[in-house]
Image 1 (cartoon, one colour):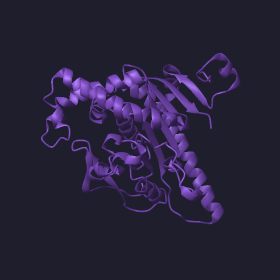
Image 2 (cartoon, helix red, strand yellow):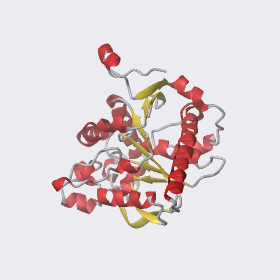
Image 3 (cartoon, one colour):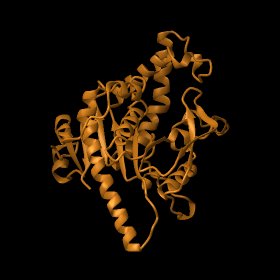
Image 4 (cartoon, rainbow, N blue to C red):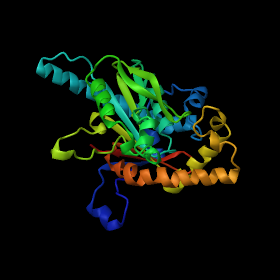
Length: 324
């Protein structure tokens, strides 16, 4: 186990890291007796396009993480009940909220779905819901009106007020809180379609910019961050060159599948030559996704409770857990 900070030796000596760093094998040893409750068939259904995950990955990375969450959730629930007793209050239950952040193509969706499957299969079978912040993107009509289609996924492309209201209502224990639905096929929010979140024990919130602080309002009025509602946050990390390759590979695979659907927003790319399609994918990556990564997403990595670093083969090779 390594507690050094990245950088030169002098910096490492003077600035102790707020994280404990684990190799893959060190982290895997923390599984203890956490049972494996997923099958290979389960994983096939949970993984995203071009984001393979193996049973061995679940055992080495996700079972120790499931064990950690069991401890954290129990401790948080105990603190909540102690506060209720102190206040002589009966506020009902308060859900434990986990944020999952990281770049486009890093594998957030697969991680969030695997976590949901594992946590929902704990012995006490908690109710675990999953919401992605894609649903809180402004509809394309608004983005086009405001000249933001090339900024889709940047902070300004989201209805931040609606996302904060949603999280506030869920955290307050309200029944039947609605979240909008996003379709990656049509590349837009689906009008009139909603996800209902009804007092879960655990809510997983997955999105690009969920750890980003809000910009101050005029007049100095305080505005809560999305991450203020999180009890725990996970950041998935990979090097730029790896992310670029994964994004291009995913684009090329979708060109043979989803892009051929007549309803697809990207249908115009389906019949491009391989060379033309790769050029388009690289252009989109560099203009939009890479820019968003460096301007908004990557700077939030240090705010996460847990950083999972992936290698070129999609395996998580390093784990960094915040000490406090």
